[in-house]
Image (tube, rainbow, N blue to C red):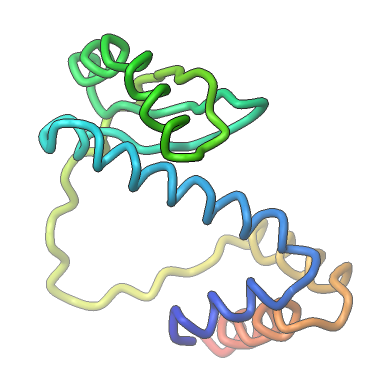
Length: 145
């Protein structure tokens, strides 16, 4: 399934609307943060939550978190001036994963038995929708292997 198809499916499923809206809001806030911050620092952060006006940013390193904390008040003001409903910025550290080495052959990941069981249960609970049909395609694909 093509990524744009997945995006359309997610946007048309009424039950997923709040999740899609939150993801889009966080993506917009991330872009604003990137516009405000120095490029080297901007590459090391991402917005992960917004609740009650408090924006939570993850920093890839302790040094990036320290710099971001120094800028958090001015960043919050910038975001607010841009129309974002942000009244404070908090920072957490989540180190970057180790660099992934290139794989020379294509790997077809398998879903674990527990994962398949959880997906089957989700499929049974979902009402008829584009998301349910997409999940059916995924499950059918997993069982062909």
